[in-house]
Length: 190
Image 1: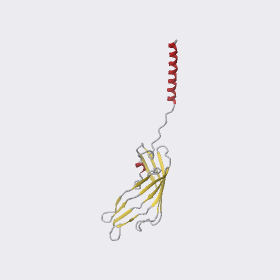
Image 2: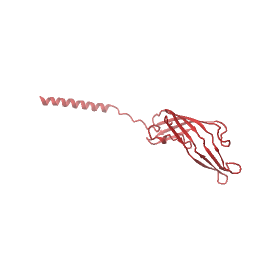
Image 3: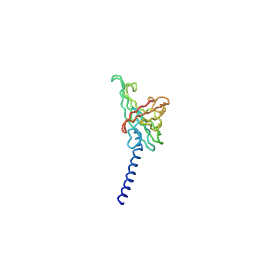
Image 4: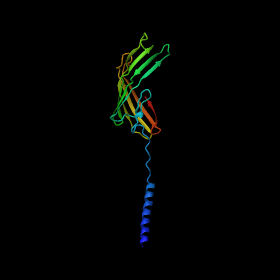
């Protein structure tokens, strides 16, 4: 009798294991989320916003400041009638004010003009370009897409020969598509 009791417990245990295995197999496995180039640690390059390349669709994270500085040395025209325009530091400071929202501080950029583009006697002229403010709002990611809207305002506050002469407004739509966790393709439409 004792052996038949053991068989009974064993078959109940076996039935419970089979039912558990069937329940686990019937439970759908969660679909992994598509990669978010704006999320997670170590995504500084996804946040880089160099204006000469294109604007990132990623807003700077809340309570974070990113300083973007650069140098440009551009030759215009031909050696006989051209000039050189140098800009430094091409300052663009981005401040994470809230979730998915940043405030931008543009400039000032120090510029030097040499050659035909400079003064009438070919001397070098120096000054600062217009400075301004901006913002960016990043929409929640959907699928592999990230989209943001940003606006920039610069006032006529630069050196007299470098200023636009009046206020300048720019509106952009920034979009990126994640190819993998580490790679995405993006564009800016201004």
